[in-house]
Image 1: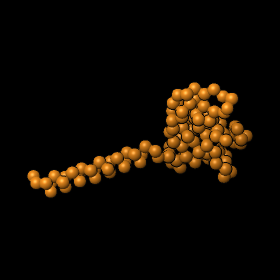
Image 2: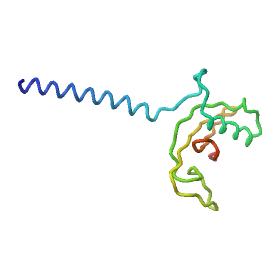
Image 3: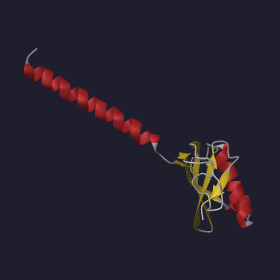
Image 4: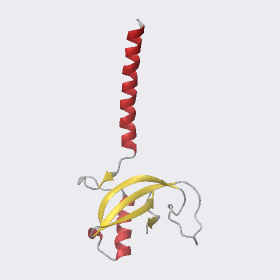
Amino acid sequence: MNVRDRSRGSVVSWIIVFFLATIVLGACGADQSSSDEGDAPPAAVAKARDALATELDVETDEVAIESYKEAEWSDSCLGLGGPAESCLAAIHLGWQVMLSVDGEQYEVRTDESGDIIRIKE
């Protein structure tokens, strides 16, 4: 095997690694959209929708799920604690949910199960 063959093999190897890394990293941060009619959103996302409907005093079906993605929050207040709140500083897994009502956008954050829900103001 000469230098040219080794060099060519190395280039091909790097192209394959780059291609696989692009696929994996692209899938990691992708938003999941509610437009997939056969797929029901996770329970926490449905709870976020219900919470916003209650907060705005509208019917749940008036709240559209625009997108949602898994998130890591830096504290128990899901990064939305007020100045008078004491939030436990620990990583909380959950969801960032983008909702809309009558064309107005809302960001709702939940913990993993949807037991903690915060609406970003």
